[in-house]
Each structure stands twice: as C-alpha cells, then as structure tokens.
Length: 178
Image (cartoon, rainbow, N blue to C red; front, side, top):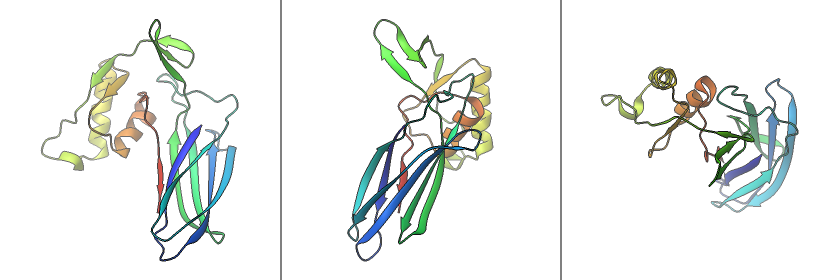
C-alpha cells in the first residue's frame, strides 16, 4: 500500500517529528506499520511517502467491500499532536487495450453512471442521508461504478465505499496533518 502524507509545521520554530503509520485488518489486528522521522522549519511543509506490504490481503470488490483502517499519528517530543484514521480498500486494477479492465486479476465490465448531486436547494450542505439515498438508487438501477467531474466529499466517498461498494479507480486517500 503506497502512502503519501502532507506535513506542515505551524509552530513558530523548527520541530523534529515522528510519523507513525499502521494498517489495521478488518478483524482489528495490526498487520503493517512503520515510523518515519524528520524535521521541519517553522512554516514549512513536506510530503512523506512510504510503502507498507500487506501479505495476502482480502481484496476489496463491489461484491465484497473488505475495508482496512489506515492509522496515522504525528508525534513531537513523544507527544501525539495529531491522529487520523481512514478506511481503505486494497484492490488491484489494470487498464488494457485488449482485455479492458482487469480488476483483482479478472477481466471486468463496469456499468457506470455520471453523477451530479440532485439537491439544488441544499447545495454542498447536503446531509449524508440524502447522499446514501442517491447511492442506493444508483445501485438498485444496476450501476456499479460512477464518475463525476466534481470532487467527491468525504461523506460521499464513505457512503460509496462502505455502504454500496462502488469502485473509485485512481482515488487516493491523502492524509493531511497540521
């Protein structure tokens, strides 16, 4: 699993920090982890990147949306100043000329729809329950993939991945720590 995190030092002076990253399996066991150390001058930021290996993962698919938890902590002087966890699905996909999409090692044809949220009087303040309603309607109509030229909000992504198992190829969860 490739992980990229953005770190920014908003303190008035240089800080040494440790980033602790772990992957937790669906059964709650920690299966991978690492620690990265660095220092940042006041007001500066950087990206840190690492790879964590998950042996024999339970692959995410629309039929079986197996979710892992990515945990990230930021420590300064051994004190945790930031923590976040993000649900992730581990999957493999390749786009080929001859066979189309190879999803988790098998050719697959997706039935997709172009999605635009349909709540004009609410706008971006649409509650999660209405997003879930839209996703359920799309799933009942036989769609298993969606696209939009507008970025998806985190609630919408959670609804897609957790509740309805829509694949979002190319989507990366980026952790942003301040």
